[in-house]
Amino acid sequence: MKRRAIDKDKGYMVVINTCLFAIGSILVFVHWYRGFNEREQDFFTVVTKLTLNDTILLSTVAIMVGGLFYSIVILRPEAAKRQREKELLKLTMEATQHDDYVDASTGFYNNLYFEKTLKSYLAEFSQTEEKLGLFVIEVVGISDTPTETLKEIGNVLINTARDYDIIARISLTKFAVITPHIKSDDLASISNRFYQKLIEGVNNSSNYRFPIGSTSNANKNDTSDELQSDVNNNLKINRRLILEA
Image 1: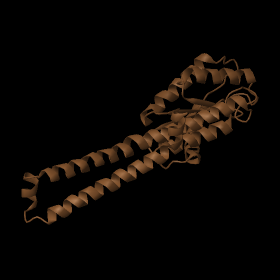
Image 2 (image 1 turned 30 degrees about the vertical axis):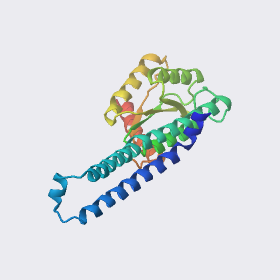
Image 3 (image 1 turned 60 degrees about the vertical axis):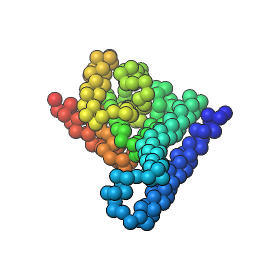
């Protein structure tokens, strides 16, 4: 119960903690600076001959600045991450209890779950330097792809992806994979790995092709719509290359 209460109020605690450290460090520094101005000594002399009071005040400022740094660099991203994890866990629990987030044909997550999860990750990563990868895999072949083949494709993606990656069927012939905590340079290698595993793992008697589009959040202000537009443009290019080969 105590841990849940702390988790619930952690965002407010981080804000309050940051404000207190910032205000405290400013007040203490101003107090020391006023005392410095009242002396009939130059700055160099004061610095080289610090009194006990000077040392205590400046040490207090250093401690408060350190606390401020800790709040901004450590606590704030951690609080955002925990909030995103709670939201994702809530979505996952809802998905297991309701049909709203599950594709009826294959049993994988659907486009609604994909949209909510993508927005949740972007909200978290907008406050950090973390990168989020987005892949869209299209099944190009006959227009009516058998359900068993779609399940087979989804299983290949699940077995290839990491445990915390998100795989969803977002349309009749498309799957999406959300890969948090990657480097932008990893997009090509991850895309190639998905492609090779699909070619090797899917019974391809109908000559299916698997063009893949990929992108990542280039900056902190990227939206879900912008990422999906980028990945679909990349998918169009790769689809044309594959079909013309």
